[in-house]
Structures are given as C-alpha cells and as structure tokens.
Length: 280
Image 1 (cartoon, helix red, strand yellow):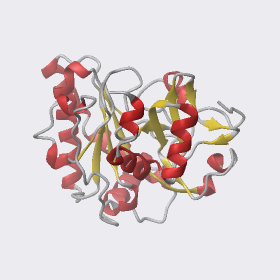
Image 2 (cartoon, rainbow, N blue to C red; image 1 turned 60 degrees about the horizontal axis):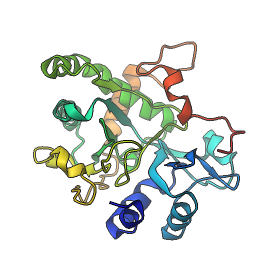
Image 3 (cartoon, one colour; image 1 turned 180 degrees about the vertical axis):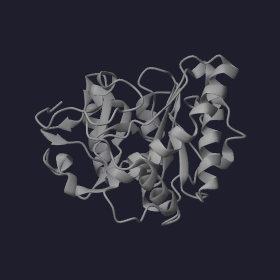
Image 4 (cartoon, helix red, strand yellow; image 1 turned 60 degrees about the vertical axis):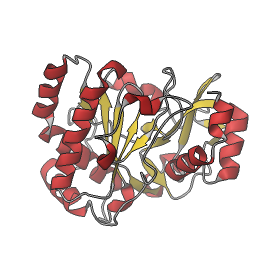
C-alpha cells in the first residue's frame, strides 16, 4: 500500500494525532531520521500539523517521545524538565517477527501482572514490527511526583518481576533475540500507531489486551490491517497504586554512573537521543 494512500485514511490520521499530541515527534523518511523542521522540533497537535509534516518530510515511520510536554515551540522546550507534563511507562519487547507468538506470550505476562495491580482499562500495545511496545496510558497516573521517576520505576519494577517468565518463554520458543527491556530515558521515542515499520512491510497496529487471543501477525499486513479501535482508553488514577508501590521498591530514574541501566547498551540507542544543538 502506498504511504500517501495509507496516511490519508481517517482512522490512521486519528490514531496518529491521538498518540503524538503533546509528544516531541520524530520520523523516518527517505532523507533519514528527522526530529526538526526549519529548526523547530516536530509536533503533531491536529490535522493541519499532521498534513504539514507528511507533505514536508514524506515519512514512512513516525515516533513520539515518552514525555508529553506542556509546549513544543523551540529546542529549549523539549530539554526543559519543568515542561514535562507526564511520561508514559513502556515495556520494549525486542524479538523477531518470525517469533511473534513468543512476543505475544510476553505481552500476556505483562498484562496479567498489571491486571493484578488493578490496571484494567489503561493498557495498550503497539506492534512495533519485530516486537511490541506495551504502554500504560499516562493519564491513568495522577500522582504528583517527578513523571520520569514514576514511569521508570513502574517499568523497571514490572520488568524485574517478570525476568524469569521471559526466560522461560525464550527457551520455549528458542527465541534467542527475545528481550524485555526498560528503555525509559529522557526524549526516548517509541513507534506511533498505524504507521509503517521503518524496514519491514508491516503496519504498527494498536491492540487492546482483550484482543490478544484473536491477534495474528496478519493483522499487521499493509492494506488489510486490523487493530483495536478503542486502544486509547484509560481510567484516571488507575495506575496510582502501582506507581506508589514501584517507586517505593525501585526508586527514581537512575543517575548515570551511579546505577547500572538495564536493557540495551546506550550506544545502541543514541540515534534516539540527540543533543539540544542538533537540528536534524
């Protein structure tokens, strides 16, 4: 399916705007990876800004930061911690598309754990291509605390609780590349819903937990994709108890050099975290 036709669909545009609104946007286009246009950070607040981005950069893949900002007008805004309204707890499941069933099993383990912590209406999944991202809707957290600390501690708390389960699934499917990672860090980006993977011929479909039993990798097929329509739902405050428990157990975001970060090596993620002087 041609990208122009795909991004002209009303359901695609609605999903992109709903996810990207308030986030610092980046794109993968033919010209490369871009986070700025005319010296300003990319953003998508409405149809007009989405059209301008699509027309100017012709992207294949769109991403949004874990942070939701109060304003995005300048480079300084996206490096201002005081401008961060919320941060989205997210689990990054790395895998291979051929082992998609193993990925689904890891998703189920995360969802079941979150259900046990009282989260029923505020969890959604985005199939990222080779793997998936499991998100907690940021508006389900109403705790008045540093949002980066809360998101990191929730993500790490659950990751640690599920380490042995993930290892069992890795062995069951002989899925050597299957990893459950905590990649929460400032300005880290994750794939937006209903765009294309940057290399694979798949659509990044959003899925609700109750639809996992019906999910098949064919859902990601361009031109014939399926997704959960109500993926962006949430219940305000639903994640507060988990946030409190996780923060008390794990603590806040680690200061580099004082606490070892779990997950991928930092150099493997540098393209997601450019300096304030970069205008790419």
